[in-house]
Image 1 (cartoon, rainbow, N blue to C red):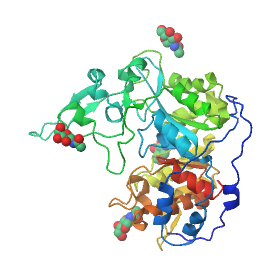
Image 2: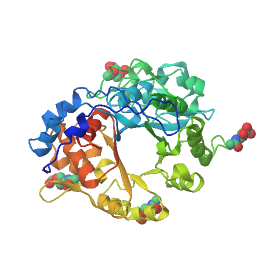
Image 3: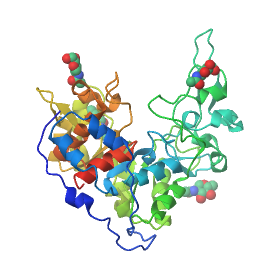
Length: 419
Ligand SMILES: *[C@@H]1O[C@H](CO)[C@@H](O)[C@H](O)[C@H]1NC(C)=O
Ligand SMILES: *[C@@H]1O[C@H](CO)[C@@H](O)[C@H](O)[C@H]1NC(C)=O
Ligand SMILES: *[C@@H]1O[C@H](CO)[C@@H](O)[C@H](O)[C@H]1NC(C)=O
Ligand SMILES: *[C@@H]1O[C@H](CO)[C@@H](O)[C@H](O)[C@H]1NC(C)=O
């Protein structure tokens, strides 16, 4: 772990929460404040850190009053580690834990209404659909496991298989499934042991418009980062006039309809053409478009991902968002340092957001935290190392925000360093 001497920002962080008026619903999002609560987890992680200056600094912030930070981005809501993703309850938890920007992954129903789901075809693992009558409408209805042939249980259920009215009857649950299930009810049960079903008692599925209304309705001046999910059906949908561009514009129209200023909206997509479309046809929103980059997942493709950054910059893209591990490398002594990707993005003047902390597992487990920690796996062995990772991202890479499945961890760091 990297050791640096830090100046705690205890004064800024412990100042009384600011109350700057309370006029609701204005486009720019006027600000109130709430009683932000971080719960025990950030404290547990600080205690679990290796000794050193960073631990000392973070420890010195333990009694500060937490507050909302735009550096803390609620991934799929921000309560996702323990609360069903993309649900009203996850959004509420993320906001309570200080997330200043909220995410809804945006996809569409068969009647072309926008809803929050992490992908168009994940209803079989994120809701109870297979155990309801709607299961019969799935692209691939539930098929039980066959222990004799060794075939696993399967299903594929898409939001575009059902209408909005049908979607609204579903219960959101923790993402997962039981591949040896012989009944649809058993199939629902697949939550990893480090998550929990404690809050999965029929969590509330949301439309994109409901998401906007709830987040804006807090009066906290929160920002929005809707992700246009890449369709898993052919576009135009149903051979009609519902093209990718109609879909891409519809998502922004819902902010206009709600009176939300474009300056509060950070539209994301993995499809480069969506980013170019917004920049050309929706310049106000396009100026804040976030290109999600997953083109460098292997040692072979990583150099191309770095090389492509200059194309994005030339095209006028201002914000890129790669997974966490693209940005951090290990030096010869095993210290965490900015990667080539981070250096190139900085050099080109690109802003960086990154995803997703607290998502793929625990740093202290046998997988060393899984996918999102790939590049630092050899240098980590305890859960508290997550703060060393955040520290390099914040202070050496200079990221503008971090998506997290448990917003408290990122908020704690952001508050302590005045981000
Ligand atoms: C998975 O399904 C099998 C077969 O239906 C069942 O015996 C088992 O208890 C299920 N596992 C979980 C964790 O629900
Ligand atoms: C698409 O077609 C339908 C039916 O023909 C029409 O009602 C609708 O306005 C069209 N939408 C757009 C965006 O052109
Ligand atoms: C990134 O680089 C690869 C390999 O050079 C190229 O095939 C791809 O089209 C590039 N992607 C973009 C979005 O420019
Ligand atoms: C981790 O260490 C192993 C063994 O020294 C090495 O083979 C591997 O490439 C390292 N992984 C990374 C991501 O640096």
